[in-house]
Length: 434
Image 1 (cartoon, one colour):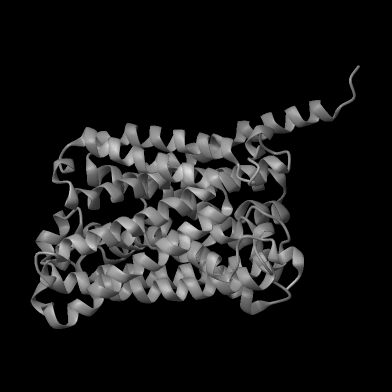
Image 2 (cartoon, helix red, strand yellow):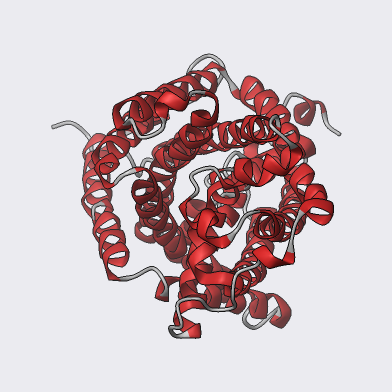
């Protein structure tokens, strides 16, 4: 390893923690309640999401090994399709994480209510607690990459413990009588699979975060692909086992109304069970918030450094953290949270989740198209993997519904004026004075 690599703050375990830490969070800890109305058919959504996300992780890993710059989806789209597409993908990616931060903060507050029952049903207190956790992890990220990485590794290891505990508990304490029917709604199986695949996509999103800070990763051509694949396999195994465990431990009617399904499942441990699992869920969601906020700073900085976004977004502290981009993202995320809390706890969570995920589907499709364009003639196997990722993303988009797709398109379109404004400003700055 070169001395230059030794100075970089992110190694394999730091990258693995970013992949796993950004994936395992609010999704798995709240999603069993969202998927309960779909019964056993929801496992179809988990499997589709797992296969599709694995294909996308392979695509990102291959692109990361080939593209020598920061920015992840933005960099890959820009290299293949030009500045305009690159900026739009960077915009969509950034927005999806700005929306994702309050989504996960809502889940954090849901489990915090296990320790502070006064939060339950009190919208203003829930909102205040969610805003407080966003502010805390924005501050940690502003402190520096080493601090962020250390926090992420610790939180990722701790968050896996309660999930493994629930999986182990389900075998002796669970009951097959708690399992729901195959398709309780009686509706179209295809439509239900599309809806569950969209919901299940959210816990799988975030793996690509590790591709953003390539210049800060030791031996990134090998480290990033290895972290992506290892992290994805870790998460797929945990998700399938944990989801089955919760179904065995919690009756379907109770599960559908739960704001802390893993805490409810842990009641089989005894009186102390819910507190143990709720504490683990708080750690898990905190780790996800930490990773999402990290991304909210890295993406605008990468675009601004290329002169395709306002230059002030690339301003950094002495530790190299984009503090202005982080503060802007936190403010926007807090505003999004406040505006949507009128929908109620689970209503706000589900709507924001679908908004963030629908934006994610857009840049997943474009990045997979970038790999398909590169490998269509030279590497048929990789082209097939890219096609699988595209097909999965389109299938999940079918399940998102018109409202979410509409707002996804509106938010995407909002990035067009930003591109032309930034290009005009940079052109003026580059022209000689008269």
